[in-house]
Amino acid sequence: MTDTRTPGVPAIENGVLISTSPATGDEAGRVPVSDEKAVVAAVDRGREAGVWWAALGFDGRRTRLLQWRAVMAERIEELGELTHVETGKPVADAVVEALAAIEHIDWAARNAKRVLGPRKVRSRLVVAEHSAHLEYQPYGVVGIIGPWNYPILTPLGPASGALAAGNAVVLKPSEYTPVVGQWLADTFAEVVPEHPVLQVVHGLGDVGAALCRSGIGKLAFTGSTATAKKVMAACAENLVPVIIEAGGKDAMIVDADADVQAAAEAAVWGAMTNAGQTCIGIERVYAVAPVYDEFVAAVVAKASKLKLGEDIGPMTMPGQLDVVRRHIDDALASGGRAVLGGADAVQAPSVAPTVLVDVPEGSAAIQEETFGPTLTISKVVDADEALAKANALPYGLGGAVFGKKNAVRIARRMRSGMVSVNSAMAFVGMATLPFGGVGDSGFGRIHGEDGLREFGVAKSITVRRGPSLLPAMTFERTPAQVQRIVKTLKLLYARRP
Image (cartoon, rainbow, N blue to C red; front, top):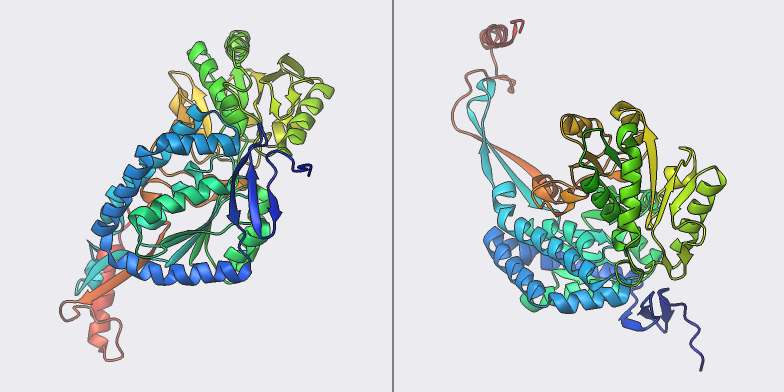
């Protein structure tokens, strides 16, 4: 019987999701598809498991998470090879991705108690009879909808924070990378066999929608802006709070005093790694006139050395080829020039490195997320013009600035959640920093202290420790006491700064 499956495109047969390599068509694995009832059942199990997991306390969870981290590190070659088969990305890229994920697990496990644990908060004079306490309590079950481009790092960013905070997790991996998602849950179960604290549900978009409506306490989503709006609408039915990471169109600014060779190296890495399928990848560069020609030449020289199948893998999602082709064609048709690659760059299942110059700002290649190994480079007069163009789009995820004297000041003015100065994408590996965007790139944060707090509900507790000096909140206050309140208020606050 002839196999009619398209390589890399998920197929569902008899309730089983079959994952194949986008590069070879080889089968990566099979997982059971979850219907709505199965999703609800998983969340119900997670709710019970979450009670047990939360009761372990920060120290107990820390031990288990560090054990999981160790298992992943010990078997990193296995995970890298599996990710290579399922996504097509080079094994080395998969290993680097796993390294970043392991770092986030380690940091969340070690810092959750300090960030989220109970602590005293200073009281105020007018309520000095009360002590104040703050703690962060888990939501119960956190749902995660993950993407296909980074199937290890992206879901484990929120998962590490959610688990460290005391939540159970139900993960819905992309239908393009279900086997990697299942591997993550299976290895977690090896160190936490008692209860299903981390579960996986598989399927298409309807499974993600079911997860939104299943009774979870919070949801973390990574994907397109269009899908993010649908996810938010589904979650809104039950007022489920969401964290949205919806992609970007990140820009790099190269100032006149930049190290041009270093900037070119970072631009090529930022644009071409993972075949350009990176939400925080560099898709646009604005180089000031004095260094523009040198920068373009350096980028072309470095990018032209990259080899398909070795440095650059295939498009994990075959349909993305059409998007990349449309953007290249539109850029050329509107007056842009290809100084590397170009109209013939799309060679299914891959795209050859492509560098475009003189592309009008209104073209699709600059306005829309391309998600392929392409880069537009535009000449600008100065950093102010670069910032105006970089900030003109509704996206605002990450960015990069190369320069010396004014680089940090330029970075602060970029409309984005994150910026790397004299590097590209460094912030994603920095476990201590929050990760997230603004505008059409979403809201909420994962990673770092802000990311941990996203997965705990702030609980404020006051404890009376004596009689009220200024009894305001009682019907038994006397006129004399009200006058004392007025005098105190004027003494404290009726002074101009």
